[in-house]
Length: 205
Image 1 (tube, one colour):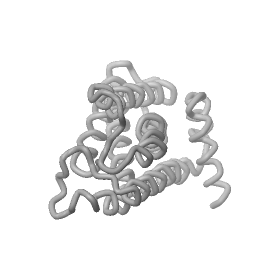
Image 2: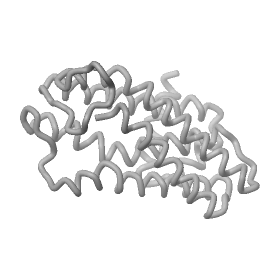
Image 3: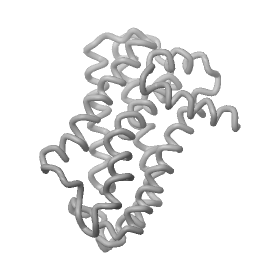
């Protein structure tokens, strides 16, 4: 188990700069499903820790809360518990679209490969644009405040920049592992981003 856990960490780290090499290595790995799950699990636990930090520093969500019955001052306490299940659902849903569009394009598809592409497409861009600033900047900015930059840039940080990166990784992974045509790659990338955003809006703040 520890060896597979170590490989998951290595795949995640090296995929930031060498995604093609990591995908080729993972495709030959008999334990790639478990390894991709470990990558998602680690990221989910890291984000749960961030939610705990935000709760401890008396942060309140900037966006309107859609989950009924939770006071704004306690929201991050509850988010701490559903972040990991949320991450797993997003991972599985995005992998499903990657698999389906690979099949629709007439290529041989393996859901195991789709799970690895999905894991990397979620955990790399959103680590950089969500987890790092929200973990290291938000807690020190004072009670009830948010990141101190223009609102438009906040939208770009949360959705545009990581969304484009996610689309690229989905398309790149499909081309690398299955030589899927570009139209299917683009469609899978778009549906992957939409899946994450739709799942994000009701729960993540």
